[in-house]
Image (cartoon, rainbow, N blue to C red; front, top):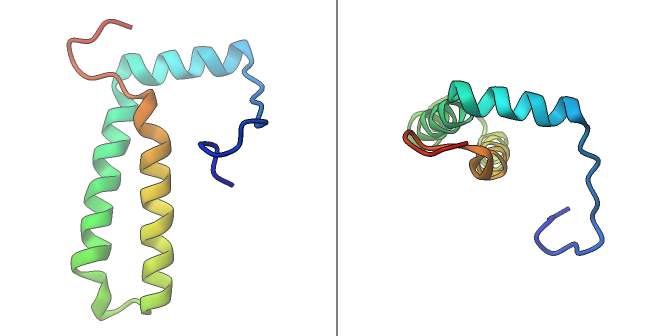
Length: 82
């Protein structure tokens, strides 16, 4: 499901989710995860082809890119106010 094309998609956001997101942003974890995912993607794109089945490799790349894209809006760049 692509949330960008689903206008009827609803989300339940509890106070605990807001607090967890604030903690992730304050500590810079979201940006760190996005950067780590980029390194893992580079590995799967450049090096994993020699020992991982191509279909499995493509599924991993797709999952990593989707996760990375989903996390990016929650990141806070250094110097940005929360």
